[in-house]
Amino acid sequence: MQKYQIGEEPERIDPAIIEGFTGIEIATIGHFRHRGFVNKSLRPIASVEGTIAGTAITVAIPGTDSTMLHHSLSVVRPGDVVVIDRLGDDRHACVGGGVAFAAKTAGAIAVVLDGPCTDAEEIIEVGLPVFCRGISPITSRLNDLGGALNKPVSCGNVPVLPGDLVLLDNCGVLVVPPDEIDALLERATTVQSRMGRNRPRIVAGEKLGDLSGASRMVASDQ
Image 1 (cartoon, helix red, strand yellow):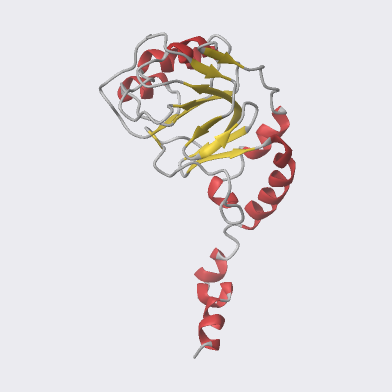
Image 2: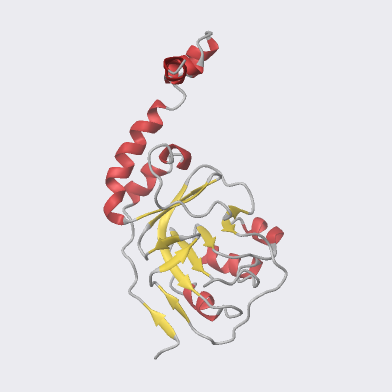
């Protein structure tokens, strides 16, 4: 069996869809959806601006070996999000300043890494958003152990397929299958348009419990 498994290049998500999601906060979607959110321990190493949206390129690499990750940066396209499954390893950092620079130069708009990174200051200087499980000084190597590119992976306890939509902001990361994208954007746009609508009424003296109906629920139990 081959050590390196490589799938087909995924279809890119429509730029109009991408543009539509950049105006949606991920927490807005969290008001009505609970699937596809990666574990909250994957955090950006620096604050990101707005909502980032892109097409998933998936990579799986074992333990100490980052051979397939380096190769994957040869096929990354502008607008892709590199999603990295570390196959359970949380000791070795496979993304540092050099890899981040290569990824951004290739066109990647973000990296989602189910493990630690290193060289945080260099990554921040490069300007590539990286979501990960913290920082480690112990790095991976080119050990030629094997790996996978554009195959199904798991990242932050969420299944990710190549071609999925990946949304990222300061609240976290959401992965959406292509066949759910249109309906999600329609509903999220509607909900986003209603966000903050109660603020003028609260400023005017009305209470949140009255506006939301929570106080009525409490009163009915007394």
